[in-house]
Image 1 (tube, rainbow, N blue to C red):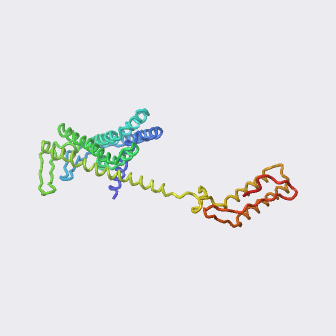
Image 2 (image 1 turned 120 degrees about the horizontal axis):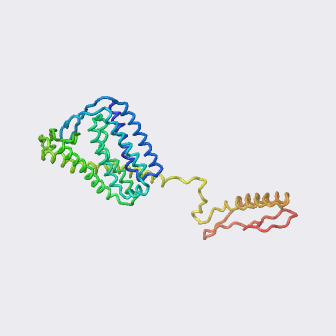
Image 3 (image 1 turned 180 degrees about the vertical axis):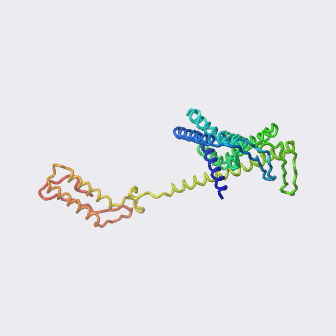
Length: 366
């Protein structure tokens, strides 16, 4: 249980770093510099761990194939601190490039999302090769690999293509190109490591690999380093089988992106309008606004006018306010009649000014 949790944490760390590299050019400059400083600080932490680690470490470099058996490519032997030095170099390189990369250069990368994904996959293969040569723990080398990047790259390309306005049918073709490029680099690594006997699980110069036919069940073995072995064990799987897996896994990651986008769009489209923001609607039968709103507006304007004018006598202001209230109550209780054309008739009413005061314009309303 503890080993599985460690593997998951290492895989999560690898995917997090890969996501930061994929989205690097799309991040704000301040965020990029912050991540560069975090990477540099992590490099210093691993450097301290390397300096405090002593001893010697040996590890088997093993590999496996989907239709074949697990094989042992060789034995790696190195200082126990060497894997920490490898991670230190990776973190410090990321921090240095992140701080030194100009913003115009980063903006130019926005137009090349597919090339960005291919470069990240190539770097992952190089880091895994270095970790295997440094006799890193098996969990480290298991977590670092292009196999895990396919869903992440699919989600990344889906977001970028949506921003660029490209149709969905362009995504499978882009994933196929990415799969052929990344797996072609893996096949080239197998060939170079086998020819030059560089070690790691890419080196098949001393590995006996046994493949089984999924249709007939017949098994076939290949001599180490032969052309037949490189053809059936490396070229066919890496250039035919794994690109198809990359397309399918990438479409799964893209499907998550499109599902989240559709859910967000639906949630925004059905969001209710608050009561305070609703405007009075017209009557569906007559097409005129509700008549009950007008008297309250007139009464409020009369009250405001009576209280806001400093030249109005207090008794007159009180009488005007009382008349406005009576107008409001009378308008609400007064019957209305509707003509054949759908218009609404209400009897006119004149508000008489208070006794002893001259009539003011605007107090008569039809």
